[in-house]
Length: 206
Image 1 (spheres, helix red, strand yellow):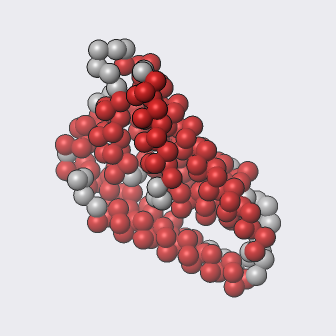
Image 2 (tube, helix red, strand yellow):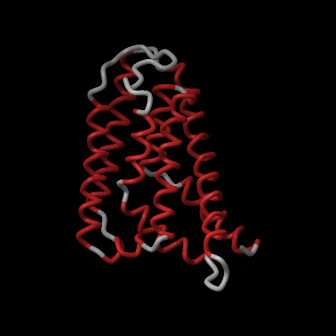
């Protein structure tokens, strides 16, 4: 891959990563609730889903999803429903003082699974990648190395940005020892997840 093409893609990857979305909301919420060390599980889930989406684009399946209104609608409904479920769960979460690792999901992979599902069930992200990634792939050069560079770049940038969100949120944990503040945090992030679900439900492929 030409260095100028890679730099252009790097800029695009940074813009995509810093743009607020369900992944950013999840990173901030988990960092605030559980601290960065535990939020990293959710972030790794986000990146695993990103790799799956890039694989789908590389195999050409993303173009099929982009062309199929039924498949897009089905995935959109699942994704919106899952975000609303996360929001309602957050809204109804019990008010308890936060200690490192408090109220962690019972299964160690619970946060990883949340991150995985938040990204996998977002068809807008996949459609966006279908439109974006091919612009940085040179047709007359081997495809696999180019997609590998794109994947490493995109995942690294997203990992760093989501980690920054979670770390900054983790610094605010010291404020959350008052039941009223904890309840407000639950309601704010619950509302953000529900809003993200509603926006996804109202979205189109265009």
